[in-house]
Image (cartoon, helix red, strand yellow):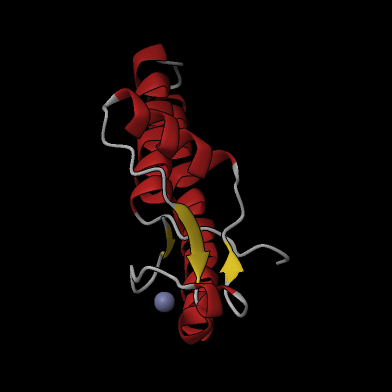
Length: 123
Ligand SMILES: [Zn+2]
């Protein structure tokens, strides 16, 4: 089935002429393989229909902006947790360093996948 990822509508032949295919990137492939393992894969071909294209472009831009913020925040958390003991107590603490790394990574993965807005082909 060929569906629009925004309005979830099934696309007919005439819709497909103006629809844009979703870029099959690493995150899409990862989500698909997870779904396959869980047996909930729909095996749909993903498109963005002509009506949703403007809206999708806006969402994609927002997503890119948000990811920059999330990554910056993660780096700050990591630096804060990792280096605060050095500044405060003058000693390196591995547990704190690892906690910072973990929190930062979880934040990026959660924000990156849950709010994932794929790119359209050709962008
Ligand atoms: Zn649509």
